[in-house]
Image (cartoon, rainbow, N blue to C red; front, side, top):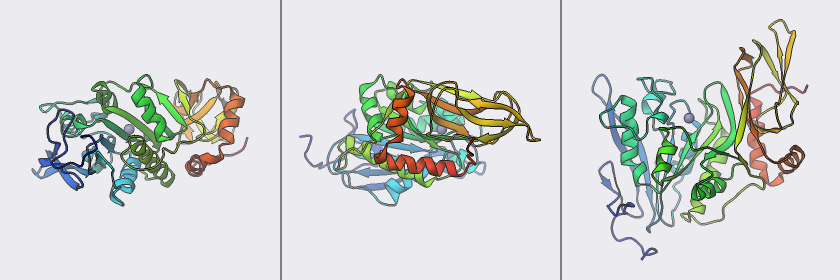
Length: 363
Ligand SMILES: [Zn+2]
């Protein structure tokens, strides 16, 4: 029964026909839909764009969401490349892609909505709630609750950049397998914040991971390449497209991380970059006064991998400079495993590319 071609519409996990924006989803069809969300001051309709790609047979229903934070555009580039520039031929199941969730935020050059709320703290939302709560409710009731799996695409916050990493609840075995299948070198364990799309979905057994990669207001080629490969690997893992899951030789599950913060107001010279394996006590940056006098050396507090860093080369006391993933693997082993990753060329390419927009100088 399971492998038979469908004669009627796709069914949700509740056994009802999968219906999105009033459209009943039929097999072997691609739909471009608009979810009615809100209205401008002039009463013009504001909608959220959704592409639905349906395969020939029953199978998992998977969502891909981007631009939940209005300034995080890499996910938009990943979805465009994956599902718009070419439509993958699914063996089974349905992909639901939302390239821009936070349409108001992106239009207003903002992470948030015009009511200044963070949409990723407002799920599952409410039909009678605030502007943001209504968006969360719309996305959750129309899309997310019908799904079995999901991938939510993010970047670092403003003035920071992230080495591509997956955020996932690694205590959940289904989520863990999906996180590994995406193929990032770093997989960070966390349940996610209360009210986040991921946590709210996983609480309802919609197995969801987040990717955090690159910086705001950019569609970065290496991040898009890696995001596309990772998303395709997830679809392979779910047996929705043919082929094998493509993983790098070294994947590290990160359960602790630490922020290295500035002690003095000053101008930074960076000596390390995203993706570098660093050793406790290693100098990562020099903090100079505006007149060029050295104020202090910013050192790694522990062995680990640089998972995030500031893109702002000037700091005030307390501001974050580096985010270091702490690994249980000893430094030398880590250095060898990560350093010799010939097969991980994609990661090296991304590392090189993300580093080029920052001046990294040897000590
Ligand atoms: Zn985000």
